[in-house]
Image 1 (cartoon, rainbow over the protein chains, first blue to last red):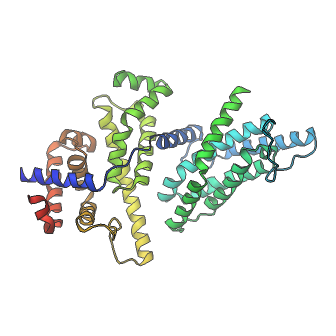
Image 2 (cartoon, rainbow over the protein chains, first blue to last red):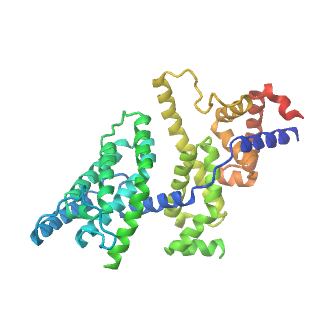
Length: 208
Length: 181
């Protein structure tokens, strides 16, 4: 009886001194969905860079760039694009690039969602290799007409930085390095923006 | 909709049912993950995410002899304890490298005496005692639920809880007056 009272008292103190914060329901759900999308689309072994789709993506981009160039004068990346007047339609990338961007964003979302636990669990080499592949795709997209998309261009620039940091991680790096990258992702709301853009891109491609 | 119907719909690939299943259980899974993660909200979020990814992947293996919540809590305990082992290894390496004298990362220097001692005492409990203490005394699970989630007889759950309390009582002896009244 004394034992029961003691346990109940200590349990109450733990609850009082360390209340459980509100469950981040949507954040967790987003992570679950991203991880499942990644799992269902990868070939076999966990954390293996998706070479075949990545190559297909690169091929799509190269073909897309070629098509873009035959259509007319090269389109400059719009890191310095002037603001669009309120009554003008926003600049959008051609459909083939939007499709490639949608695939890229889904894979990037999966990496960013899985990065904290992957790095913490000592899978740094796999995470870095995955980021390296995505970094290559990011740079291809930045050099393509996809970068004319006013929503996508700044996101691609932020992703290039984040992915370069993750790709440079080494197994011996300290948790502080990982925390810095996580802070960068959080401060620029990178994951939230990727999710938003991935959803929009998937919707737009579905509508085409 | 009954639990069984919900599971059937999830197994048929119904995304609305997936979300319904998630909504029904996420709070309790998160609470347990938070307690087993020593009150680290980031870890609790990661563990909870992992629990549901695994649960959806393996739902077809779920034998309906127990409640779905019991099965989910069993996955939660497994994910959280494995995760915490890795985190502790990591933190101890970090502590060594930073040459910090305190060996207990969970204790924050600015916490008042009893609170910090309480955190430290619970954190020091061996894993098998801590999970039973957290589930029974902190989160209000029954011994039946704990036994089912941790895969052990009810008697073992009771014995471990008793050992956990004895260790806590010894650790917190100097504060005995605060709960004796």
